[in-house]
Image (tube, rainbow, N blue to C red):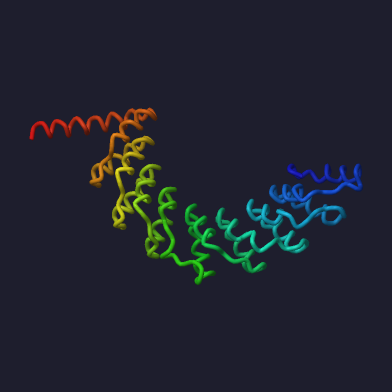
Length: 254
């Protein structure tokens, strides 16, 4: 089932005519998008266990045509599978639209946050317009979107009055997303902590470290030097050392 060779499935059916096809095999075919195999099984095999995880697998792996086939020919999956949330995880807007229009699937807060965290802006906009009572953007936290470097998502959420914590800038800095750091600095009041420079230094993002030093007042701790050396980011460590030497010189001359 995993490779989708319908000829092999047909051969097995001839060789073992009374054999049964378990639900996990059907789910594997759906997961891998093997529509031809599923169609053949439905049309020619009487001992297939439908109604397991095959619909979930099709949605979770972006196989819309497989999902349509299963919806039309097999029993619908339980409501608690939250299929539209799975489509939201991948930003599969066409799948989300189909699930809502054809099956009436609804959205949970987790589905919204999956799309937000992955920077899937078109999907989030569709959610907001389609589920206005469920998607309250002022309740959406943008920390993960910032940490993942999704600048356009962060900008849009900021315009929608979403919220964040200091971790937004800390983690954006730690992951080297300087443009996100700059935007948060200019447009938000949460700021950051010493973690911002510590994380950026430890991960080797010298330009981020320099920018934070020049534009923020939090500074760093001994962790910045220790982690930059431990992770072999010697250019960062050298720059930090120069700053420390300069500070010591200024202090001794005061």
